[in-house]
Amino acid sequence: MKIVLNGEPKALSSNLSIQQLLDQLSIPAGRVACEVNLKIIKRGLYPETVLQDGDTVEIIQAIGGG
Image (cartoon, rainbow, N blue to C red; front, side, top):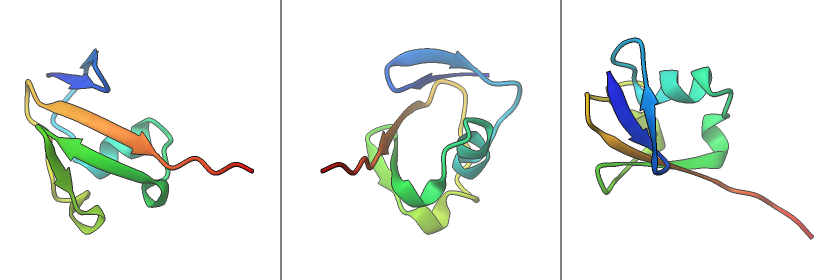
């Protein structure tokens, strides 16, 4: 399965949920916003939102600084 992740092609071994993708990338879900095909996905729906071949995914991380 192939998706576009943050503008770059990415091959996945199978259909993953957003939560599984974040886990695979070692990104804590509490500090990101995810968009699939230009639609923002609510954090509570990450485990049940399954990515499909050809999806475009944007993951935006909150970064603090001072």
